[in-house]
Length: 445
Image 1: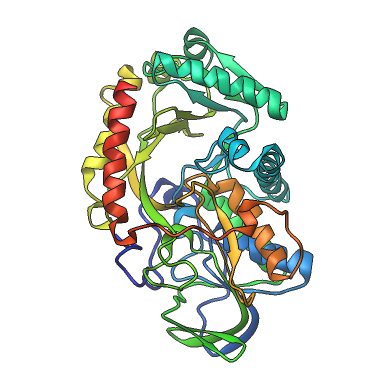
Image 2 (image 1 turned 135 degrees about the horizontal axis):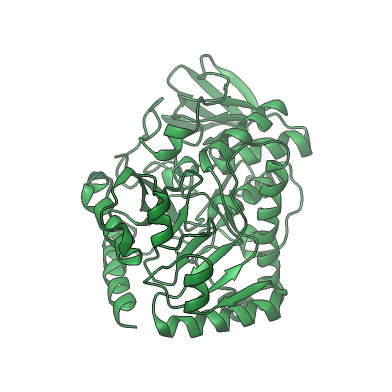
């Protein structure tokens, strides 16, 4: 599997992975074909995922700039088409209480407002007619140990106080009777505004909207060489050169090794693994009391997450391999299936029908960053830390404002660069160490 820490290219025109989403979503929408000649554009956006498509859409709609999106493979070939499809008001891995301590309450509230706006931006675009199999609203955060329920209750009270957030506290019995009989759950808190959807169809919907607004989307057009010539950024693709006044890097966890000095050594791509089971029978659903289609995540350091899909399959995810070379080892899918069976013993004989993985993008400070070079000619948005399905669309909107030389909120998300990883060549060693620390923490603390 393509590994961004080792490979200089994600390929050219590669097909979608053998995922559930690729199998059920139908025919991809039309795009503008590969770059086939030298072109001169105002803005080139590298990467046709959520960030890039949102940036192109908002540039066209709000600023009258018709950008060209350049994608190495297919629209949403990366994490935008591989994720679990959870729409959440999430801020990466940094908690709001940590933000308040570091920057003060005003900045913390500003970041919360941006995350909330991300969900509203997604909802607004879906309301324009995007068919993405949206499920009923609700996000359940389960305590995987009894002592974690106390932490969740404290979190709920804090968010109710800080944001007036509508958070419901569920006892173990409430959870098992009203939602699902997860034997690894010791109670939960439930938010009213998260939901699940088909992430690939969502991205395809963004592409349709962006092209309808005047943007161009070129697939099978990887950037093999990048140079600056005068006041132009010159991007070489297999069949043509793209010269642009401004370039947006919207590749997140799929950014190739050494792609640009502005982003080198500032991210850690981490594999997330997902399985989707065969459809559950009515008897199996009843035995698990699986009544909900809400999205579910637990309190582990190495989190598991799941939801019931519209066809009564269970999507279940967690961490994957450390390197791309090991990504397709069936061990990781089998490990997830084993954990799923401990949560729902009635599914002891269930099998998975799909298994795939994708690169999420971790930042050293656990926050996404939208930034640019001093010349205001190269921009990026990266580091969603596995929580980018909704915020990446807001990030694309803010990127468009930056490219159009408009003011954006004065927040660390937008006014600070991604910090560099110390001892960057050893990032995977640190990741290995964190995984082992997480195992101990989740089991004993």
